[in-house]
Image (cartoon, rainbow, N blue to C red; front, side, top):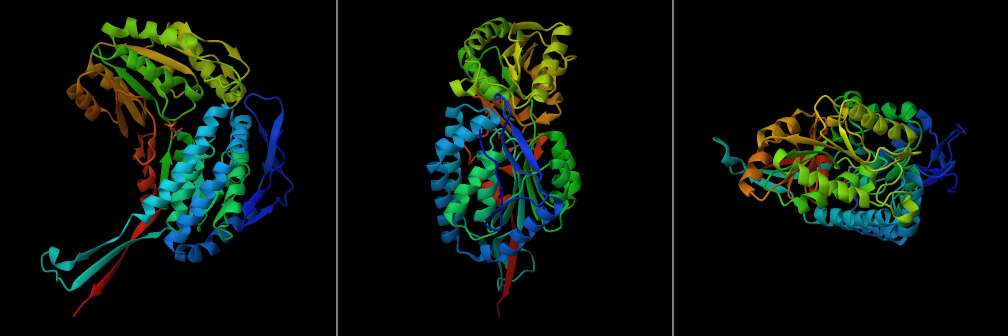
Length: 477
Ligand code: G3H
């Protein structure tokens, strides 16, 4: 069992004067695995003031020095890889192996972010490029920080998706208010221990924990928050965008990524990618493959091979390194079960799964899913994969685009021209040809359209989103 955790503000570990804590439950262990402080709005406001006060001096620290501190933070994180992975396993039910690779990915992410900034320069321009302009007018264009960035992270990558907001914010001279997900807060606090040891100036990152209902909107609408970077559910993101008013926001939200399988596809390759895309970490990834749109002529073959692979998936506790593990909480498992029940009631064919033990939903494969079933449209964030059979590329494109989401899509085909044709038609942030939908490698742009988000992440783009242009014009004689 993990202990009671404090919060970290202005370089100090503190307890809330409210005396209130939030109890963190594990997806798979009995009872409470730890507690975090439930901050009041006054305490959240004080954290914002620390970040605001620290920001001007932090922005002036040389880029080399900022990069050195980020490198130290990355080293400290890697040094506690086992401890961090253990915390993640208890708190969000990620297998130790996956949790360890998340720490490694975070180490690489932070280092690359520092390097990206070190290799970025501003530009200068002369006025005579525009009609009537003079070459003696020289514009110097630099990028400057926005101020205090509010980073709100989700449960499913409590370390990586936190650092992928903190690192670009920090390297570009912003200070940060870091609000981890409730389940994810213990891991977030552990990250702050590494941060504290790295020796950053006080107030540069402040972690606030507590009830979203108490401090969520309060943080977002606070006048001293300059920008919000959020990863989480679409409903919360939509509310956040309204509350944020004129503040810039970057939102990474839900998805219903289709795996489109053409009749000329390499079926074995498609099966391998769809299985890992749909079921890794029980499908609790925004980029998971969440529906298959397969051509009628190869549907029987694909489905038989998918079924055989689903039956081989390792299912159970994250402590035994399983792929399909208990979902984050019982509400989530209830939602997934309701989708399965609805589909079966409406005539879908069950090929595997539909078995539940507590929060563990066994990997479920549904064939002959039709558009009247909720599972055709709703994001499950769980291990259920609907197969929809289609008669043409056009039908696949139409069903793919009917979704309220537009994160990514996969196309499996041997015909590169067709792949490009379909990719052009799809309303998504990214299209993967002959590969599973996924965010990485982390320097690629990462974005969703429609209900899947707003703004672009990926290392260089995250830095851009947390800075703005600053123009200084030199008028020479
Ligand atoms: O859950 C959303 C993450 O950004 C997905 O990342 O594709 O590396 O699993 P991933």
